[in-house]
Structures are given as structure tokens and as C-alpha cells.
Image 1 (cartoon, rainbow, N blue to C red):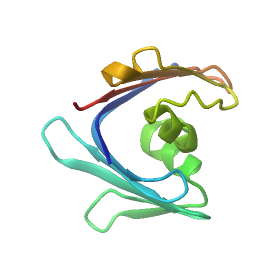
Image 2: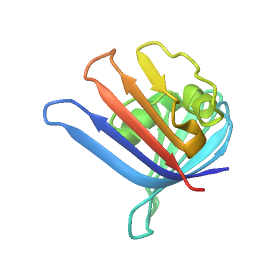
Image 3: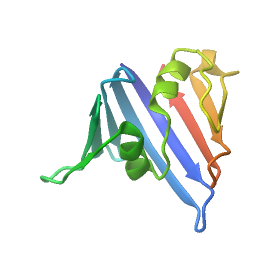
Image 4: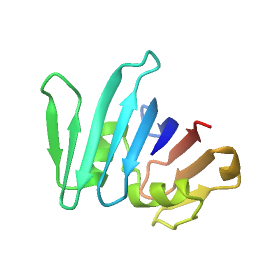
Length: 130
């Protein structure tokens, strides 16, 4: 399991910014991502498995999606490549169409990735708890 902080800045009009603490369990094929506010409240729990994904934002509000990419786009504002995220967390600079990862500070628990295509550009930052 990985824990830390994640932020996503989508350079759209207007610009969108998402930031939360997180707990990530599982693998790219089947997993769970819990997003937590600075005050410790659970913002949502994202779960995925082959062919399905869901976002539970509490109080009986459950949304279903066809893919983890569609789920991530809804939850954060951009389709964060979950398979690559798991690889990046392990220090593997996996390539994803349109994304470029900077793992130069991986040993410090820091990951930075930029999506250039499709527009709008998006910047992803992950800081792992130590």
C-alpha cells in the first residue's frame, strides 16, 4: 500500500486543481484509491477491476464507469494513467501515450508527470509518506 499526497493541475479554461491525501492499494488491474481531505474526511473511494470501476463519494452516492480511466477523469479532472502510476510508484519509468514522467526524485518519494496530449496539459505530482 502507498500513502501520501497527490495533486493534479489541469491547464484548462478555467484551470482545474485537485489535491488530496491518498491511500492506494492493489494493482493496476484491480485496486482501490481513497482520497482524503486536509481535515481527514474521506472525499471518495475509487475501486476498479477488469471492465468496471466505481466512485463512492459517501452517503449512498455511488457512480459506475466502464473503465478506470473514465473513473479517474471524473474524480480528478483528467484521465490519470493508473497502470503507469503503479509503475512510477515502483520506480519504473513506464511510457504512456501523451504522458512524460520525471522520476529523478523517486528515491525521495516524489514523482512528477506531465500530460501533453490530449490537451489541455495536466501536471501530476505525488509525494509519498516516509
